[in-house]
Image (tube, rainbow over all chains, first blue to last red; front, top):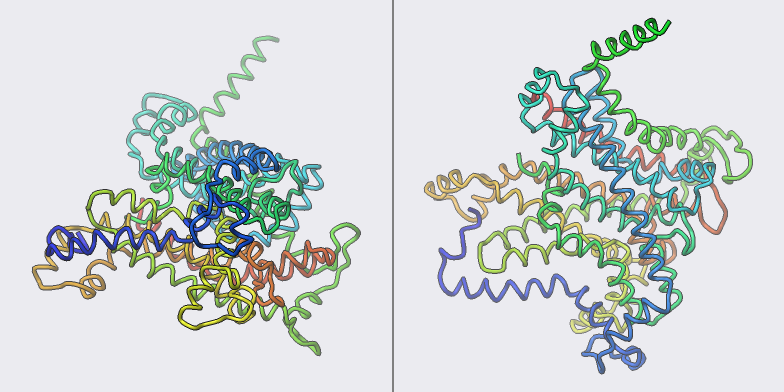
Length: 282
Length: 314
């Protein structure tokens, strides 16, 4: 193990490490801690210039109550959910199939198509912006949740296919050969042999895509406007102009907006990290 | 008659059965390829096409040849577009400084690669910033940087540094302030990549090197880092892409200001195409094409590296 385990070092070094750890964490998360403290402060603290001191009174329920009952926040959160969940299902389904095709079969153009998916996944969003916005308007889907979902599914399929294909490649190939010898059709091989083995990959991708899409801001701004279809990342701007300079409410709103992916991460940590670090180990 | 029909279907099924292995992959690929072509591949071509036009996004587009590019790059008698120049240099700053996330992430992962009680929780809390949306990160940091009242201004005030207008209000510092905010989640990402990589480092090699007297940075450089190469490659890929995609933070923290000093190509393109000053889609598309070519340089390198790997595989 590297660096040398702390247990093998002097008692002083161990004590030093144990104290340094929480300190480093506090410094690292300082901006977040500050925002959390902001969100439980009363308005008066900001008027009086008490930005970074302790709250003069505990207003957590008041502030968060305002976020939920006196703004469009719940609507935006709901929109985000309506955008994120179908995207996750769509992108995972499409890429599981594409990954199966690219991972199992040898045919002309296999690698070319695979690389096309990877390359497309790396392009700057801006080169897609004008045509995709146009297409969405032509389809009558501008400022709708469907318009956003269709694009997200298509774009995320690139990354997901890369992931699925590499995962399927690592599965034991003799299993598929054995199934073929038994005379099982290819479609049934996908459904009954490969898909059950892909469960970890499906879970990892689902959590990752959930976070990516929930946090998307660019496409939300390009393809939607207003509270009918906008997700929470774009809605927070409107929320902030509604409560201009009301830092206690703006920070409470930000925390609410950030919470779902954070909860997702802590609940599904193992899958999340497995997805993110795919390929980091040979 | 009916027997002929049955024969027909049987023949069809036979044809599918005979070619099953050849056809199935295309059946499975079709939906993904359809979506990807419509929303990703074709739009790239369309953007190239639009970049040779003058177009407000509503009426007819007029063919202007390379006029957009000439204006952008200052070919001929005109000067290079000032805003483009600023954006381009800012993109370079982003690229170079964003790469700091890799050594910083490595450093934190080395610090956290221990087995003490609660270390799992520490690791996930250190990773935390990556999960939060960039919009929220941007908001949080813009409050952190507030002039006078912001924590950052108060801390720098203690050592006697006073940035005029605040970190984000001063054209000389604003871009660096935003990059620092971006480094926060990016470092967390690199950290998790390296933590996973360190987990897989061969303990026998480390022990053997220890017996040979290797330790500290020598051990890190000659024994550990070579084994972390895959993690470094991915950290490099995601950091470069993240740097060139920077948009959310700029939009939220400064909206390109002060005096346009924090624009990058991706932001400038958005501004030209969809701002309140009118829709100049052709010019915007030309900026996007330039950004695409910068990115293409890296994409080709990434694909080439992956191709080398593939050749080694099955």
